[in-house]
Amino acid sequence: MANKASETPDDQDIPFMQRLLDNPFILLFLGVASPTILYIVWGIIEVAQIPIAN
Amino acid sequence: MASAANFRTCPDTGLKVDRTAEALIKANAVVAVVFLAVGGLFGVLVAMTRWPAVHLLDADMFYLVLTAHGADVLLFWILFFEVAILYFASAILLNSRLATPKFAWLAFIMMVVGAVMANVAVLQGDSTVMFTSYVPMKAEPHFYLGLIIFAVGALIALFVFFATLVVAKNEKTYEGSVPLVTFGAITAAIIAVFTIASGAVILIPTWLWSMGFIANIDTLLYKIIWWGMGHSSQQINVAAHVAVWYCIAAMVLGAKPLSEKVSRTAFLLYILFLQLASAHHLLVEPGVSSEWKIFNTSYAMYLAVLGSMIHGLSVPGAIEAAQRRRGFTHGIFEWLRKAPWGNPAFSGMFMSLVMFGFLGGISGVVMGTEQINLIIHNTLYVPGHFHATVVAGTTLTFMAVTYLVVPLIFRREIILPGMAKWQPYIFGIGVAGISLFMMGAGTLGVARRHWDITFTDAIMSVEVPGTAFLMMGLNGISALLAGVGGAMYVVIVVGSVLFGKRRDEAVAKANPIIFDGGAAVANYGSEEQVKVPGTIVLVAIFFTAFVLYYFVNWKFLSEVWPLS
Image (tube, rainbow over all chains, first blue to last red; front, side, top):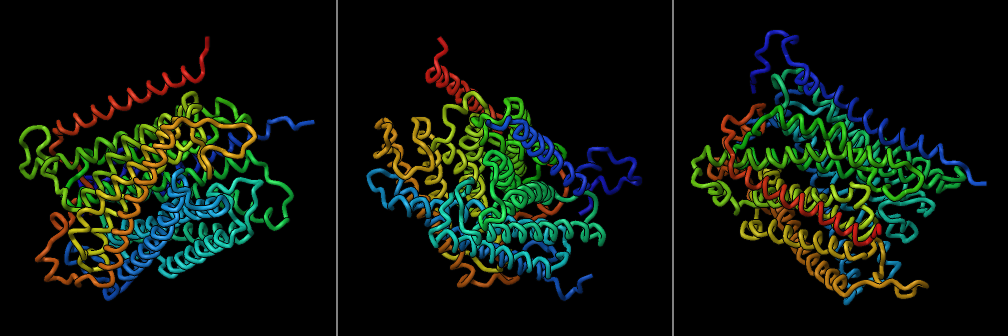
């Protein structure tokens, strides 16, 4: 199961993207934050701004 | 740490298999197939009612059955199977023990109780609110409670999956990066967390509203948050079935991705943007701005579509590269002609790939474009589209991988191999018909979610062209074909699990079903040979179809909405 990345002696030498993709919890944060902000929160703000009918 | 006695060594792959994970995979897969059988039967009844010449059920029963069909196949079948995939992609592929097995069993029990409770509520007749359960339509409280219990169970299963990743890393059961199939499962699990959180945020207040504790739920707010669950739940499927495409290609042919980095980046695009496509359900809502609609669909969704197109090149490319490595190098398409079309795992996967791209993918982009969405919004085109993505895409893929799961996990040989060889074709052709003919009827203006497409007793008459009746008849025939294919699947799977010959070490050696012990699926690594001319031709055909269909829809729009 070895791969070339595992032979790298120092974590600092691992490219940023690979470190990002190797961390499921950062990905989890991004994957929940992105739709929460861009879809849910922005959508709720839009609904909240609808004037109430008289 | 688990003792060695808790593991067995798989004679096919040499992988260490945690027996608890194996038992949970079996339990979740079996219950998934039960819900597929029940939900599929409801689906045939729906299609027989939508076929105007048959019109099988009365209106009340039609809406009840449609509600049950949606819940059983869109939620319960899919999510039970996906939990099985998550445990496989974590504990089995990473050679690890499953974390917190008692919580995994608790999750399973909660999911079963919730799914049964929601089904009982629907079948009792007072919760006919459709899959979307839009307020102010009100179901019985135990309908919402069943969905909530099911969702909490699924959420616990997700935590077990993430905890297993931590256990595997800490106990060094693998080195470096996780295999691509596990990465795809991580993507599915991340989307699932958002999905279930959205469901909890809206279903818990709706449950309280159904019991009278809350006076009112804003309908537009409900729609926005509900679709965060309703559409994203189908994006879990996309990530999961793409992971399974890579898995089957690796297991059957030893195919490695053309580039691990590129495929993982495509999954990252899913993680960041796929859930935002939920907004396309709200493209005609007056309460939200065009900025919100267009950003979430036409901009963000296209980045997720880019991810799908990368997978659409990478998966057949990986197959072509593997086949060329095995000597099928003559011409552009020898690799494809001599692919194992008699192996239901491969044929089901490849048909799913083609139909998901050509039928589901292209129609999805059309639906996600605010202007041309107007032509088909809330018509039968919408279920036509998602039968291409969820049934031809996800269900057919999950059926295909079952032909590997039964021998490898249940340790049983597949019974009726002749029938198994034909099953993906019969189901796949049926589903392609369902999808195409519903999209055709929708393009002609047939409304979705209606018992009577002619609106016979409506005050304002609705004219539907005769071709639409033909489309609905062909949809009914296709549904029967898919129903036969689905029944064949259930017979083969249940029969194999109960009566199949035991697959011990001797049988596994005599009848190997996976390539090179599945090394390609359990390891990180890219294909060295990346010259794939056949795949480039296939992709060029896809793009031509995509562009033509996209612009044809703008032409349709100019005809239904003249500007002069």
